[in-house]
Image 1: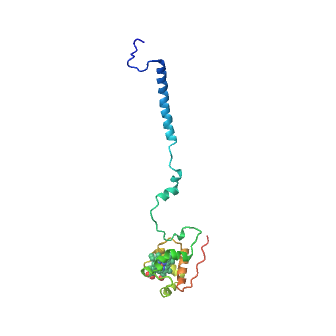
Image 2 (image 1 turned 60 degrees about the vertical axis):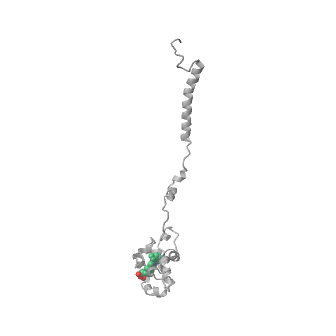
Image 3 (image 1 turned 30 degrees about the vertical axis):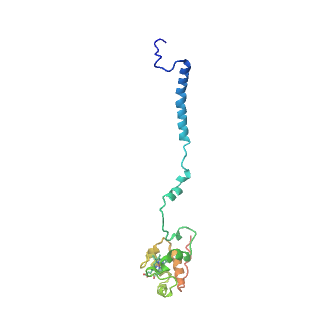
Length: 166
Ligand code: HEC
């Protein structure tokens, strides 16, 4: 022990040595255990928040114009009246840009002569200020129902086409 420099070491007894050796093991292991706990128990973001629906809802545009949403729900077919009220009425009730008004017999009489097919062609292709398909993605069948409703409001006597076979 003579060559041992006692001034440079704070370990002076075997008990101290044992304590230091034990601490040298225990402290890092304790630290590792704490780290593992931290990683394993880290609060995760709600997994439901990453579902495609939730993501789509979050990144959805602020507003959307649904012209012709009538065609969306398959099976839940809308009546001509619904379509006219929701879509066509935008122009045909106030008579925007010379659109023949709902129930205006004088405005509709000459147009009724074209018959349902003729009128459908006008709507499908667009006429005057009315865009093709009246700016909707409605099917021919839905457009026809709307035309029949509108025409018959103005004294027409059109029949709704038979529903397309599914
Ligand atoms: C953006 C406004 C607008 C919307 C929406 C609109 N229309 Fe029209 N529509 C017009 C205008 C304007 C005319 C007159 C066109 C002309 O004769 O120059 C017209 C004319 C018509 C005619 C007569 C066509 C003819 O040959 O004379 C029919 C039928 C018709 N619309 C049906 C519809 C139906 C059905 C819808 C809904 C699905 C609809 N419109 C939605 C503006 C609109």
